[in-house]
Image (cartoon, rainbow, N blue to C red; front, side, top):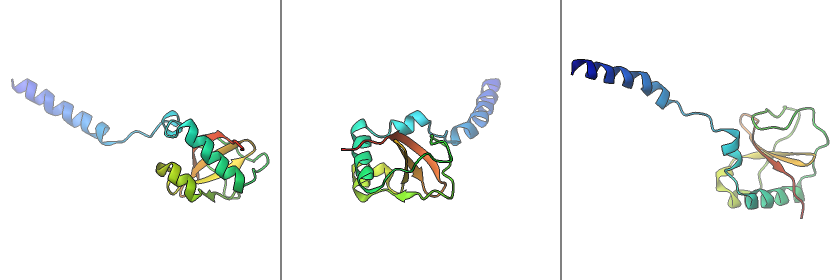
Length: 117
């Protein structure tokens, strides 16, 4: 019985730090945070007010960092109403892609096509 208690305590100590760390959300999970309809409507809102940048000097992809020389625009209030989980996000539009960006880290969180009406 004592051995079982010691093993249980050891396992709890070994597992606890791993459980305390929240794993980073995968790129697929972040992309799935928005429905196709939300992506389309947000893209249309953004396309109306922001012309796309020509080929950028960086690769637009999830987890990439937007260079300091590229301005990150604030997400329109209407887009935040459509997807409240995006409150505080910014964006950049490069060629045919919209990248939603965390403005504090300048890290690209979600990428989807740019749709016009």
